[in-house]
Image (tube, rainbow, N blue to C red; front, side, top):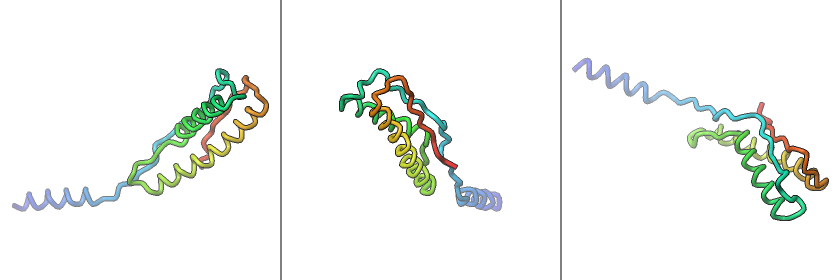
Length: 109
């Protein structure tokens, strides 16, 4: 009976420990290709925007649902990173330059 109580206490102690979650490590930079897009059209700019968003998600990573701090960090990373990448995209679209890559880099600390 004592052994059963000890095992139950150990099991309860191990389940009661807090889980220290970390966000999923992500790559820091992704290049967005756009040579195949006609950036003079709305369809081309929308396709570029979708590619940028996928790159932003890739470089910022994701956090588990139970990690609210991590979720907020990822959300902020995505917001800031997309803002920077969109500024680059606007320059590329304005110049209609098809040879220049857009570098998407995470700005995490």
